[in-house]
Image (cartoon, rainbow, N blue to C red; front, side, top):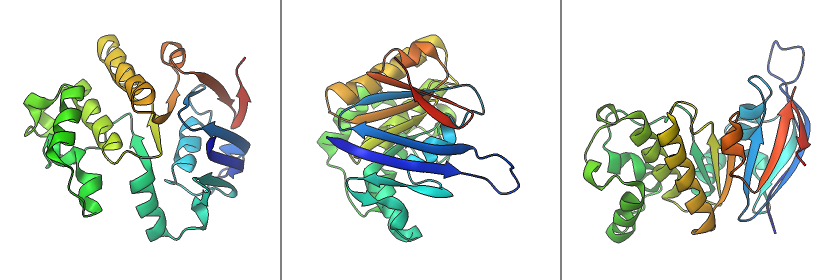
Length: 221
């Protein structure tokens, strides 16, 4: 069953002669682990941001759970994105004045929800962060900060998890740990995961790989 359908996405930024993304269509199945690969400047991050409702396309549509997300106004889109999309960035995007627990539970807090302590404890244990509950991001290693970002993306059990170069700033050991967690989320929890990467070792762990180059998408055999 398709969980997300993107149709004829084009994105041209002001002042740019050529589109960053051109007529891209993509269907993502529920429970899929998809990797989108391509060189720097190929349009990978632009595509991810459009799929997640972070940016709006020049033309085209994205449907998630049969909701055309770009028919929503900004407030509706922000709420929908917070509840249905888990975003993981290369540079973590943690709140520096919030603890590990506060960063992870922030999406739920913004919705006025309280995460049951058992669920939070289980997630922290899975992330290996039980001993860092009250630490601030500045007190954590890069790998630990990315684990917090993953926890924040998963805490609301979103429809889809979108990761933008999640291992790009990490060494090999931490990169493998991050990919193991994302595979666990996919296999054990049934999360639909999309990873943007330029790393062939990361792409090999996905169940399907598509390639983007010069803003155009192609399926990898």
